[in-house]
Length: 283
Length: 80
Image (tube, rainbow over all chains, first blue to last red; front, side):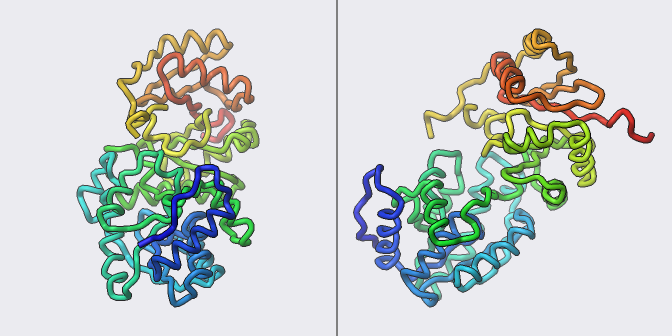
């Protein structure tokens, strides 16, 4: 178990990284749930430094819930971090409790993921860890319960790393993920209660890929409201895409993914906006 | 977190939003989807500048909406 004392809330990122190295050396070797995003890439990088390549295994869970582009990026990031990778298929879409898309959908997805990773970790006598950070603890994250039940540890959150801390240290480490936007699963674009199907996930994936191909940068979500797609851009991108001609291009891109109507959210990107619009959390 | 759970949200009031938008000089058909207001201003809409966006969103909040979106209709010069 960890012997790292808790850090004061004002501790700066370098001190936290020192504590993280100590934590990993005390608790490793580790099997890391790896998405190739900002948090898990940073954790992988530090873990390799603390434990060496033999002390870390990054596992990518693959399903229709994640865009194929993200797997490609995850592999590339793992290569740059010099962390060994294993890819496993997860089958959360086969679970009717997940597919029904209740408000605690993430619980069933993560329970499936950790159930696949636990035996792999056990065979290798590794501790399962994930990249949850301290900011994540303040959002509606039923998936965290599945992690707790499976005995998964979250060293970044335990040591008080915020997303800003992770990005700051990622810059210092030269990680390609330092400034990439967060990329939660595609099912997060569907309002609770709308069944999660491969077709709907693919529709969202195509729409977002088409918008990226047309030059949309920064945070981007295409929220699925049935025949309507609601596009959330970062505030600076709203200004870039404000002109009628550009909006027509944006509309065409989204219609090409199979939606019949397109709208742009004036508030712009918000993490978990469907939680707010659905009344799960206050907006 | 318990403090962030929504209480019963104020029910969105479409008429109130329409009146507030009219005061801003915006004529729009409004649809309500949960706590989102969907505006259709017709024609080939441009997105409002940051100041007007803030005013629209504020009007939406005061009418019980969490967000406001503008629908992009088929461009009027598009081939039929």
